[in-house]
Image 1 (cartoon, rainbow, N blue to C red):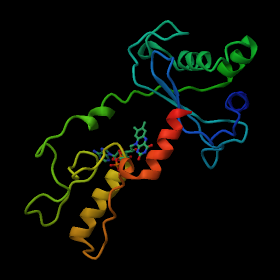
Image 2: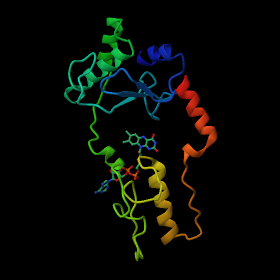
Image 3: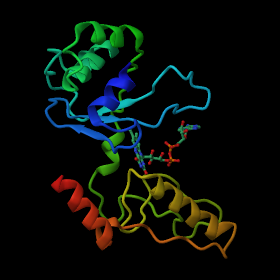
Length: 192
Ligand SMILES: Cc1cc2nc3c(=O)[nH]c(=O)nc-3n(C[C@H](O)[C@H](O)[C@H](O)COP(=O)(O)OP(=O)(O)OC[C@H]3O[C@@H](n4cnc5c(N)ncnc54)[C@H](O)[C@@H]3O)c2cc1C
């Protein structure tokens, strides 16, 4: 039922829209939807979505608690309120009663965005290393943008190139902000 109501709301098939920022939400919710089924063995009559929040300490608009204090059901209730799915109590209850909402805290996830000066993070291949490298989001790749799979993958390619396959070409990091076509589509999206 959630999928049908959502598609009616956005006038698009689920999965054909980017993450939906719910700007009126005190928790700063973002709704991420995908073309269903999301998982190979997912039953056809189910729908999997996820929602992120940046301000879990604020009091919700429809559930008068901080997100941190909420059960999964209450988090879903807040989401349904913002999507105006709470106007039909029967439908709302049916979605609430047939959904599984699993809260998940990622307390350290934004640690990746801590300011980084030269020397704070090790290079992928430390000076003098003959057989080990560092991988992941906390290595230093000059000008690299963390919190992306690209960052981890490029670091891994650099390590493999150094120790396993010197002929490997390390692809350049993508910098969308310098791509005129990307900038135009971002400006268009913002103006919508
Ligand atoms: C909510 C969210 C949304 C994101 N959205 C995007 C996005 O849209 N685009 C994008 O590019 N990136 C996105 N990212 C970031 C991206 O998912 C990560 O940057 C990427 O997965 C990091 O890959 P990794 O292999 O370095 O680390 P991970 O994927 O974290 O893999 C590390 C693995 O090591 C295992 N591990 C940890 N400790 C041990 C141990 N002691 N022994 C054995 N195993 C261990 C972990 O279980 C894990 O499987 C998102 C991240 C989050 C959390």
